[in-house]
View 1: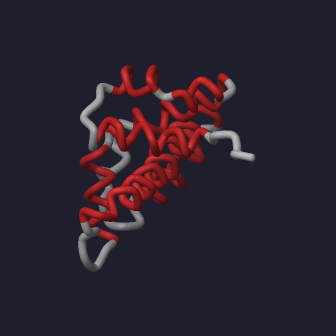
View 2 (view 1 turned 45 degrees about the horizontal axis):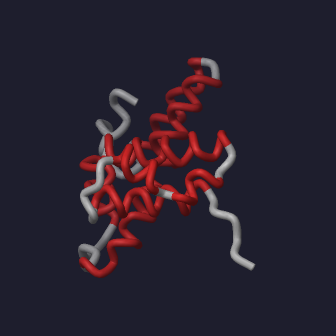
View 3 (view 1 turned 120 degrees about the horizontal axis):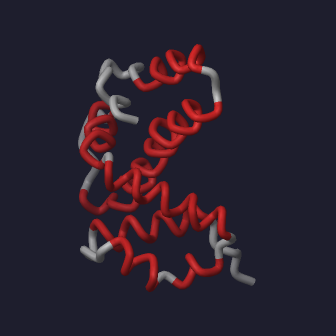
Length: 126
C-alpha cells in the first residue's frame, strides 16, 4: 500500500521540476497529482518551502557550499535539493515564524542561529 505524500516529499518533487526540468512553479504545482492529495495546510507548507528555496537559492547554495569540503557531484542533485529544503525550513521559514509569533526580545536568538557559519547577511530581509 503506497504511503500518502507529505508536504516535504511534494516540495522535493516540485524543486526538481522547476530547477532541472525548467517548469514554471505554478505549472509544476498544477501538474503534480500528489499536491492535490495534501490537506490545505500541507499544500501551503509545500508551496512556502519551494518558494523560499527559489527566492533564496543563491544564499542557500552558498551556505551549503560553505559547509562542504568538496562540492556535491551533479548526480547528487536530489541530495542537494533535500539540503536546500532543509536549510530553507530551518533558517528562513523558522525565522519568519519566530518573528511573527515571538516577542521582539527573542529575535536576536533567531538571528544568531543564522550567523553560526559567519555570514551575518543570510537572514537580512527575512
